[in-house]
Amino acid sequence: MKLPYGPQIPAVLQMLRWITSPMSFMEACAAKYGDIFTLRLDNNSSPLIFVSNPQMLQQILTNDTKEFEAPGDTNLVFESLLGKRSVITISGAEHQRQRQLLLPPFHGERMRSYSQIISDITEKVISQYQIGQPFNIRSAAQAITLRVIMQAVFGLDEGLRAEKIQQSLGELLEKGSSVLSVAFLYFPALQRDFGPINFWGKQMRRQQNTDELLYEEIQERREKPDASRTDILSLLMAARDEAGQPMTDEELRDELMTLLLAGHETTATALAWAFYWIHKIPSVRQKLLQELDSLGDNPDPNAIFKLPYLNAVCSETLRIYPVAMLTFPRVVKTHVSLGGYELEPETGVIGSIYLTHRREDLYPEPQQFKPERFLERQFSPYEYLPFGGGARRCIGLAFAQLEMKLAIAKILTSRELELVNNDEIRPQRRGLVTGPNRPIQMVITSQRQVKSRIPQLRELQEIKTTA
Ligand code: HEM
Image (cartoon, rainbow, N blue to C red; front, side, top):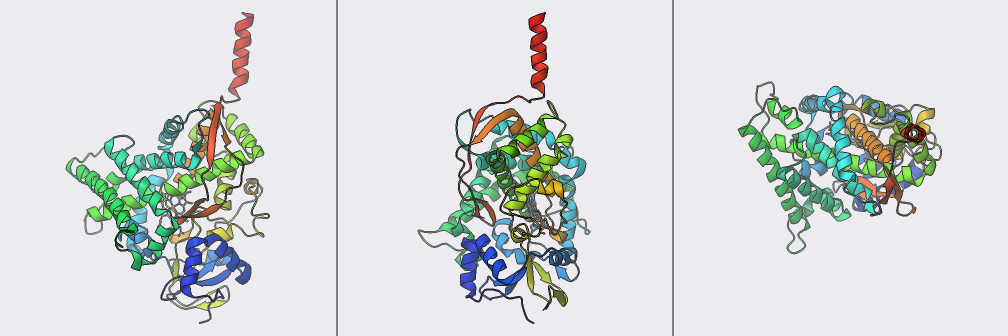
């Protein structure tokens, strides 16, 4: 079998470049080898084929239960955090079943019922920042998305345990986002105690701490069942498999951890980038405000969700610096021809979301933030795929978009914000995903009124003064 070309340096050096500078490594490989290339990122030197060509991505993602598979055991890098029983780490029919269970709360009516909660939580969080006091917008966004997902998953926003879980998850993620921490995930041999350095041991204790809180919550729910609850934990606890068996505590813990982590870190980063771009480019902010103001006071969340320019801003935010650089790996099941290469069963392939979103032929001047691209043409799900596709397409796709749009609408229409300085901020690895390479500092300069109300207020004042 002849594999696509790729760097000839030893696997360990490829892995180091992948850990320290994944985006520039992928760009360098694409410049040299094109739309499909092979990297060797593990000690056994198993090849992994990176793909950024929309036709090839279509072939993979529309066939990932036929010619290809989307197995969970290739997602080992997530196992230490999410466990063996997470929707991300399980495979085949079991994976499909679990997805069917998790999808409904994140779509349609059930999802829209979170609109008010999202707006209220956004207001609560943003009102903690004073006028003139600089703050890191990613921290604010993370506080919003963590509280929102806690509400969706547990029906918990406030209370001691909710606060403890939020704090514990926040710490786990913060410490887990460094390059060092990623090295521990990719090199399982490092995952043990090393005396005084003991990074892994400390991280494991943080995880145990979070686990204890999750198990306490599960235990309490078992002791005091409440049929009226509609949160996702209640739904998972009520579910039965074909043999009539409920999920075990371990299964519940792994699924809760998955939703809590996948459900807030990614959306927080996307929101922070959106605020960066909106305030970096004055014309973007101006057009967006015009569109938002056209809805008047207390706009209907559905109307916000459908706004075309807001949608374009969110889409462009996830195009230019996609939070997830890659899809999960897929594995060849039966002999298959991909991009002119004959691949044998067991070969790993992976979609590079980052490279696909930077293609000049699809996105002229790909380094430029231009929401108009999304108004001028429609992109196929294999040309634009911030949430992946196929059998493992993101469960929270619609939920994340709703949350981004409602949080942006809430903050932008009620406050005037500015970037503290206008220097360029670039993406870098943040744990297993990406994030800004330095804090995006913003400041609230004043409160704001919806513009469409101002003429009405003036009219009222005029009536008063003439009366
Ligand atoms: C801007 C925010 C988000 C981005 C960019 C994002 C991106 C992704 C990507 C690229 C995948 C892999 C898809 C593939 O391999 O084809 C994925 C999977 C997943 N996402 Fe998201 N995601 C986001 C928000 C969320 C939210 C809010 C949830 C909450 C529930 C969530 C839950 C999941 C889960 C559970 C999976 C695994 C699905 C499976 O294995 O079947 N994500 N996401």
